[in-house]
Structures are given as structure tokens and as C-alpha cells.
Image (cartoon, rainbow, N blue to C red; front, side, top):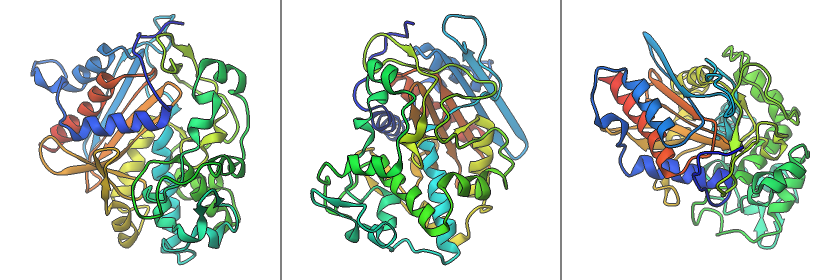
Length: 383
């Protein structure tokens, strides 16, 4: 199947995150430039679709409103519209769920952000200059550990041939960390900032060690079920998306897209494997920034940010802090996993949220338009 012709480069998760956040930090412009009588949300969704995305869906909420808009198709070879509240792979937006569980355990006194990786996972992070005895849990969540990202080494995420051959392969967290340990760290712990999915795979392993139960079990018991996120799941090794959903398309840096909807997401445990909907993500962000999931001390830790030069913004513990075009900032996290791209944001008080996703690879224009939608919609609701 042929995509939009947009050419992508580099590892799927990292480049998408960097491009979206850089677009947000350099000024949110675009779809809001032409005030008309038409619904502004629909205009911004159409602007994303016009960049070449196969399908787009967005939902925006405030205390008294809930608006949504869609454009494009759920499958490139048909005219089937994007499903309302369809499910999709949220990619790195998963990291906010993982960080929330860790901070809950910190609030319960069962662990500390200053605990070392070695304390909870003896001998796991070592070799080639890596040393878990010098890396703290805080540094994992903050991406200041220096540990290399493992996802560029996963064949299914980096070429069409690799996807076809290994889309159903199962990885264990231990296997993923071992792959990352084959490479020296990018810098000494705390001496720099670099986005690495391996950090959150390790965080998931630590959750297991602290609680005696899997990362998925804890996310379900602590977040998904209490908030009633009925369309959110931790699929484990299950490769299919159940329920209403649009197909996801990936081009792997070429001019030709393939249907990449089916995927065993075990390579992204803790870092990018959750399936959700725009509505459920909005409810999660509202609860999180509204103080329903974390005590004030832990929410302060999460939202205390440090410069992330690689992205051009600031980053806390599982959340990015992004400038608003109308002044101030909001919190959110982009996500990307094989053709599904999402960007969500929430105001500091948790009362206003915006989430958008697309179902195909996007270049700088697509990512710019997505960040524009979130920023402008949060400002529009606020005004």
C-alpha cells in the first residue's frame, strides 16, 4: 500500500518525539492562522490530514465541554471513516503511566527516587561502562541516566523486511536491557540528557521487583481500573488491537507505506506498549494533573522539569513541559509506535486537555500541525 510519500528518517520512537517537541518549542503556528466560521478544531484536524496523514482524530475537553473531530479514512484502500473513540497504540505516552506508578510507590514509602538501579536489579545494568550502582530511579524517569536506547536495535521497528519477519517476536525485559548493555553509555549518570526507552523498560522491571507483580498488573490496578479507562489496555505480547480501530501505516524512511497494525509490543513494555483512546487519555491526564493519582509531593516531583536540549523543551518525570502559544506552559507526552502517532496535552490544573492521533508516518509538517492543534486548542479553551 502506498502512503503519502512523506519520507522519514531514523528510529521510529525517538525521532518522532524529538520532532514533535521541537516543533512545539519553536512556535505553534499554522492551522490557527485563518480564522473562519468553521469549527477551529475541525480546521486543525483537516490541516493535519492535509500534510499527508491517512487518518486523524482529536478530542478536546474542558469541565463543561467535550469536542472531537476527524479527517481521512480508517483504512487507506477504503472510504471507511475514522472511528469515533477508536483504539490505537499510544507509544511513548505510556511513559507517563509508568512514571505515575513509580511515584505512587515512592509516596507509599516502598522505594525512593534516589534508590539505585543496582539496589533493585543487581547485576542487570553493567558492562561496557554501564554501572547501575551509579544510576538512580530519578535519572531513569528523567532520561539523565546515559543508558543507550534499545529500540533502534529492534528489526520490526526499523525496516519493512524486519517488520514482516519479526512483528510477532516476543522480547523479555531482561533481553532488551542486555541488548542496550552492548553499547557504552552516552554520558555519565546525571551529566547529560538523552531520550532512551531502555530507562522505562528498567522502570517497569523495578516496579515488578518492588511489588512482586508485573508492570501491567500494577498499571491496571492503580490507574486503568480506578479511573474506569474501559478502552485502555496493556496488551503484553498480544499483537492485535481489539475493538474499533483504524489501521496504522509505516514507511520506515521510504516513500512506500505498509499496514503495520499487527505488532507484538513486548519490546516496549513500560515505555510504549499501551493501547488507548483519545477519550481515555484525556481522562487520565485530567486525573493526573488534578491530583487524583499522586499526592502533592509526588506530583511536584513529576512536574519539576529540567532542560532537555535534545528536544528543545523541558522534561520532568515522564512528562514534557511545553510552551503555550498564549503564554505559560502545559504538560504532555507524544507517542509513536509503527504508524500510530499521538500528542496529548493538559493544563497545569488538569481541567483542560487535548489529544490527537494519526495513523501513518508524518514528517515535520505533520508533527508541527499536531503540536499546533494541542497548543491552540488548550489556549482556545482557556480563553
